[in-house]
Image (cartoon, rainbow, N blue to C red; front, side, top):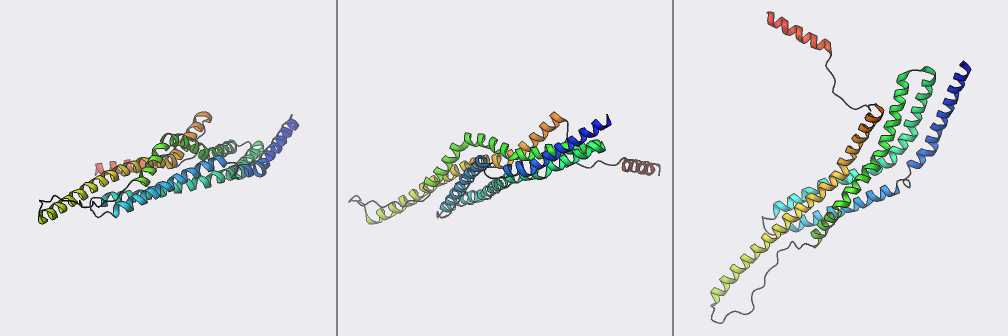
Amino acid sequence: MEKNIVLKKILGVIALIAIALTSIFGVSKVTSSPEFHKKTIQSLDEKKITVMELTAATAGASTALALIPSDATTPLANQIARLSSYLLIVIGAIFLEKILLTLTGGVTFSFLIPIACLLFGIYLFAKKDILRKLAIKLVLFGIVIFLVVPTSVYVSNIIENTYQSSIDQTIESAQSSDLTVEENENEESKEENESWWSGVTSSVKEGISSIGDSVSGIVEKGKKLLSNFIDAIAVLLITSCVIPIVVLLFFIWIVKMIFGISIPTPILKKENTSDKIEISTSKKLEKNK
């Protein structure tokens, strides 16, 4: 019986070594290559192009509004210019996703899985349950971080496809909108019985009113553009920054529900019972005094 048990342990160790070597020299190279994540990288590149076009549209609209000789358009120009900082956050998130896409595969299958195999092999002989639990946690953690980015990109694409038409319309409207004050030409012919002075004063009044009307129209266009920019940037922030975090938390919840294993997360330190006893005794002494 003992020989059979030892033989099973040796066969188990050999199987674990084979799994570790396959993970390091086979699966790791495949999952960390850009070719393996070709579709996901292509989707991220398309999103980056959209963000760059939206950034150029906000810069162009802000510049056009700032060049108008009126204080009414200055606040709108400043607000649209501030939106570019949020687009930089989206671009940073896209680059981070592209880096993690190939990095997580190498980390999972080159380090986490082989270390888990080593711990499980030691457990076969040492029979310490903590080694088995740690090995399972490493495997699950590696699988979770490996699947987070592809899954989040897939979910983001579903949401973006719903709002892509509105984002494209925002970019097109910003590129095609005419945010300039047009100068109205004076009428070539005047009524013959109109005096020279009355003609000059009426022309000045008409020019002022026409400029005021054009500026008010541009302000309305600027407000509409600002609203469209905010909607488009909100969608990009949600799909690029919020959804990956939600997907990670969802995977951790799934792991807890199915396997009953909690992946370590930062928690608040609990107060020691000795500290509580000291506080209660000090309060009693103060009351007695």
